[in-house]
Length: 131
Image 1 (cartoon, one colour):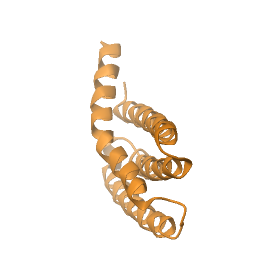
Image 2 (cartoon, helix red, strand yellow):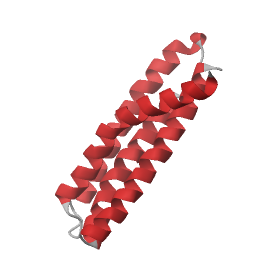
Image 3 (cartoon, one colour):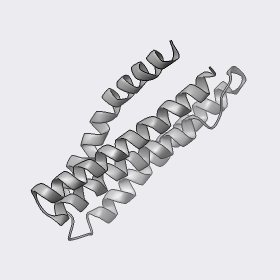
């Protein structure tokens, strides 16, 4: 299988799984706390997933050994847009009085930290299916 296709597939699986985790966390926060907490954790988690989607889009725009320079430049651009999106989103989030800022950050950071174990697990699952 083409490495770029495998990477795109893994990225899509990761984004879907992350979003499912965010929605589950939102339901749990709603059941255990209140609607504001649920919206806050979903907002932070979704921001993390959305920025990962932007980065993934730029990472997998090009493929092949002949496109090495384009791939590197695209990754740099993806990182820049991801950071810009996070900064702008948090500026907006901090203006919204109904969101619990600590829970927004908790949701965002949780998804940032979970992306690595999710990638490892998905990679192993996909590898087992291919073998």
